Length: 517
Image (cartoon, one colour):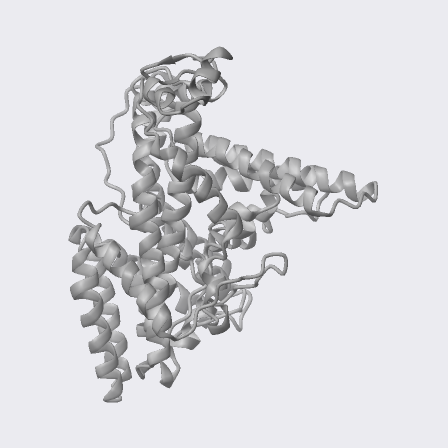
């Protein structure tokens, strides 16, 4: 079931909210949690009931391992490490089979000229998210940082529908104490008002922005996959359109998840914090998919040695972490290369910091800030091309276009509507003709406003900051918010307008991009 669908908004959400708080008001807290778990399982099973057993089996397996680890916490020699290895291996085996089996079989066939065959495997929805979330739980129990014997609360921790499908990847210690509060089961107007505002802001980003700019990127990438030559404006138009599509799609989903959680009185961790405002790649990964970055830092980069074994080892650990992070996003070489690109970016970023720190350069001021932001945005856009492309050949086609290998033609229709500018461009040698892919002129009207929106406007968490919308939100003092939400008729009208616009434009329902990862 999708957040941006009529069944979810009109039926599932109101019924789930009403019965949860109604049962909670009667004092039956365990029944209320049971209802929320059942509703979350129904939400997951709506996509494909056949994989509901996989989710339930994963919950039972990891809860059992967690109980075993907790029982052995008082005896370091009780085989805890072996039990942890079994738990992690079981989780990785499941995700390895469903997500990577076909990929590895194809890689072996290509590399060794073999003909092994494996029937196509349908990827279960959200397996990457609930698997990583439970691996983190097992490691935390092993370290003695948490333990949980309440089975119902653990089930809700894993299956809570606002964060089940595409994150955030929550920590056990962030959620369980919230489920244990008596106040959780009492409906509060403030929580509902804050939650529904954040939800419809996110829905607006998804329906009115992300799905709209998708029409500018998809035809070009499809043509590149079919072998067509891509020109300069087509390549950059598609790259920028996908850059904004992914941004507002993921930002919209993250807002909707936080808003839904808040309607139930639950605060989720922030997962998206204006990443295109980042002034470095290090800063970008502190803002983009923040809970995944946290997971890779705590459970991969630091166990590999982090930065404790010298610069060379640190850079190697960064690249390994990002390669695996790329592979987490999808079973394909394009994702691995995208992760490798970001690994190299981080290597360059850390090396540059070491240089200017050792030379005591004072790199501050507005010029350096905006130059850093622009450069970071540029390299992120370049990397998104290989992330979006179906194959490396398709990615190379788009890169060739972006570098001008296939010329710089612009559409005749554009030139005709440019008044004096059109003939001037022709005098300068600009080619005209019918492009292979007709990039709509509307992209010109979207690109700059969307870039300014990403760079200048406050994000949803900044707008709602007085009401602590997310767990780990820390506002950047360089980026103050000049728009603030408060309960008022004006904001109620604004939310109503966004809701109406979204509901009337949800005729072509589209999945969130991160569902496929």
